[in-house]
Image 1 (spheres, rainbow, N blue to C red):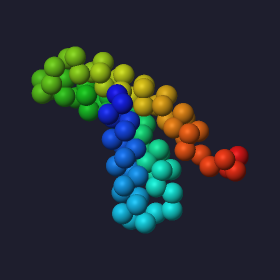
Image 2 (image 1 turned 135 degrees about the vertical axis):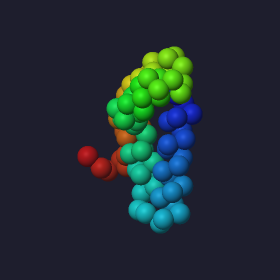
Image 3 (image 1 turned 30 degrees about the vertical axis):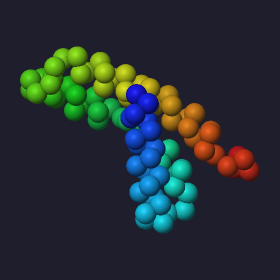
Image 4 (image 1 turned 120 degrees about the vertical axis):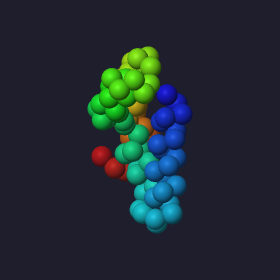
Amino acid sequence: MAGAILGKLAGGFFGARLARIGRPLLVGSILVPRGEFSLVLAKTGVDAGLVGPQLYPVAGLAVLVTALASPLIDRLTRPANRP
């Protein structure tokens, strides 16, 4: 799960730096949460027999962990003077 969080954070950060967007850390932190679409893709893959049934709970855990981590990352990356 740490790899998923760090990968999204780093990808957004470096992408924003390359594009010269204002606050790259903010952009990276916005990309961290994975949504229900990940669950749809995992379920479709399981139903089609493309991946094993053990993938679905892992995808659910990844969605849950990244959704819970997002507000924490936001607090850590927020400038001190922002409300």
